[in-house]
Image (cartoon, rainbow, N blue to C red; front, side):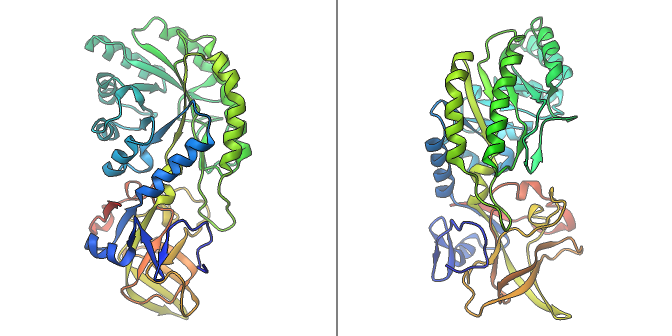
Length: 409
């Protein structure tokens, strides 16, 4: 199939239109009743989890970081697929506690947890990844007030980084976790407190497409955990190895070599199981589970030519999909994969066009000078790779436009 899209195409096409969750895009738009909207394909999410299960060692537990997509229906679906949830706020915690996931399989992380959130987490019986001495002291006090021993793991800022990652979460000065060299002192203090030590959370980076970098980080994570465990107040029962698995967005990017990552991790497991006989080993992923399974759909409301260049004005924009506009972590703006969803293969060839939204700012760009079909008013513009860090990561209130619908098919 010839399309302007540059990455592996995972959505079916029928009658030259995109099919999502078994439904043609034009019919889906009628079913939703309005544009813009997000649509997530549950089959693609389920298949991705199955691919991970097949590639990774059987004693690796998969946790979903719901910050990637906290839509309740998506989280409910994930509850039947993964082994645990990781949340980053009290609000996210409320969402996962409504699912069938046991509280003992839920953890919370974040560098600025409030006393209210720590109390919530302790009362719920989930694992708290403490990120400072302050959090540890508050958690201990809250536990004493509630008459329980809260479950505590230490989030570690490692002394290495995940090379080539889109977002570095460890190594160097970071707001996340406790510096690795300070962890032994914190663990000594923990021995005297009424908290239950569970293990370590070592997350060094995200959005990485280089298998070699992920493999190196995993090896270093095990080595660091071995050193830190020497000062632990009890056996390591939880070792969160982080994640970092990326998905392709831009021209020239290739999918992660998942079999290579799995084979390397399999080679590390015998020693890990020997050194941590009581541990549950966790890979924590968000984007890798759901990112490619989602699309953002807006409708062309105007077609304008300005000094020889075509602008497709849609009813969607950065207020719904900040990441696609390039204003969510990109240093140099690159286009997400975008196509005309009701005419995937352009019958009249492609034209260079810029897709913009309705907002009164030049930042409201969904695709800049991109080869697209000759879209007309009423056509549906689709931003692919939109299942993660979409609506919940965007400034929805900006300029007062209506919020889009989200659907899981």
